[in-house]
Image 1 (cartoon, rainbow, N blue to C red):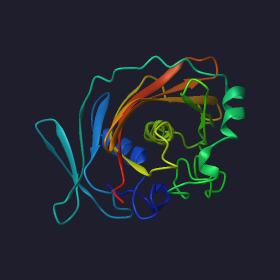
Image 2 (image 1 turned 60 degrees about the vertical axis):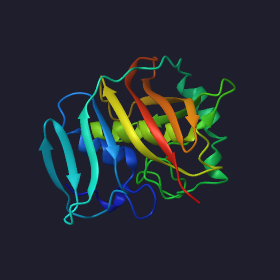
Image 3 (image 1 turned 90 degrees about the vertical axis):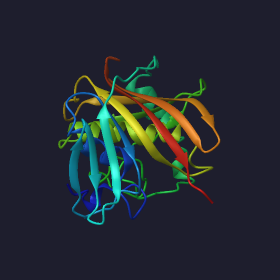
Length: 221
């Protein structure tokens, strides 16, 4: 397994959602992926299966990520329309302050067609929303990525940087290329350096295509 350089989160490591999606592809059905260390880019990684637990590790034995089958609880988050999501995305906090502005999923410094450019705005309810026009190279791994960063912005990572620690995702349907979708997210609770968030991907008519629960960890210092 190799995380290509294009799919970074922080500049020198893999985007958490993309990495988790790659690892989850080794599990049959919904999965929970835990990131144990910043995923290295452009580095061959080895895989082993121990009692139905997938481990992805570096040449020196460092475990990068683990994955197990999971039953992912879906939080009921009523979606806004694609047009409403477009409007709210103009208030994306990452335009003013972003800890990782070149992130493949949510970095404003990525060019259109290169990154996903999912710009998440906050609603009066406290939930967040982002519009997504699905690219031609859409995949299950990309769906994992699309559910990742919008959840982080529900925590408020512009004020205190967080990174993904664990994510569990259930995909009902991979959206069609070119379709208009909306990702909704909600902060469920936070304690100390940890924040638990829920996200859901909806198509234009509001049908839920995929959902996730994730734990984000505040970066020390």
